Image (tube, rainbow, N blue to C red; front, side, top):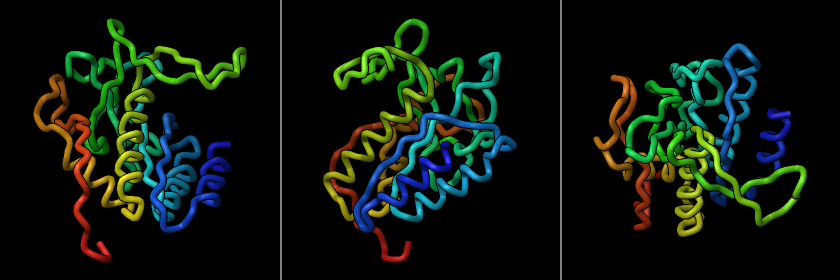
Length: 198
C-alpha cells in the first residue's frame, strides 16, 4: 500500500513545481525497506521534497540508529528526529548520522497538537494530541511548504539544503555523538539561487 501510494503521488506531481510529502512512518530495512527507499528516491528525483520521521525506537521504546529504517536512511530525504519542550532529545527519538535535523515532537509532559482524523468523526476541523517523530517531521514539511509557496521554482535540494543550513545549531541536549545538533528554525527570507546542475 505504501509503495502504491508513493507511486500515486509521483504520478500526480506537476513537473517543475515544488511539492512536499511528509512520511510519518518507517519500516526495518529488511521489511520491504529497499522498495520503499527506491520509491522515495524516485519522488525526490521527480521534484518532491520528502520529510521523514526518524522513528520512535524499538518495540520497547529504546532509540536506535535511524539509518536502520526505511525511508529514514534515504540521503536526499529530510530525516527528522524529535525534541521535548526543554530542547532535549526526546526519550523515544531514533538518532544517528541519517538524521538531518530535529523538531518538536513532544513528551509525556507536553504533547504536540495537530489536525487529526478519526474514522468515527470524519471531520476536517478535528484536532488531537500525540508525541513522536511523526509529529516532528510534519513541522519540517510545513516549513518546506512555506518556502515552496514563496519560490515555486526551487528544486528539492535548494529547499532541503536551506532548511538544514537555517537550523539553529548547538541548542539540543542529550544527543549521541553521531547525531547533528540542529534544531528547526523558521527563516522566511528568500532562498538563494543554486548553481545550475547542482
